[in-house]
Image (cartoon, rainbow, N blue to C red; front, side, top):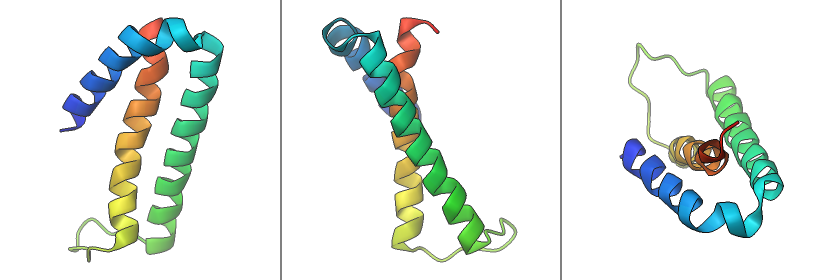
Length: 84
């Protein structure tokens, strides 16, 4: 599923956003999106003291962390097709 989301985001970025928004705006948007997603995931793992050897309970905060992984992937994809 993650690969499908990244592929769709890449296609949208290449077809619609690069020429219309410009590289600078996409870079800034991508930086903010990736930063916020990674900050949330880091805070979630730190606060919840995640131990992968034990089963974890399903919470809303956990689902938001999963969504943040996808937000990170999409945000990163919006700038990567342009060539760093």
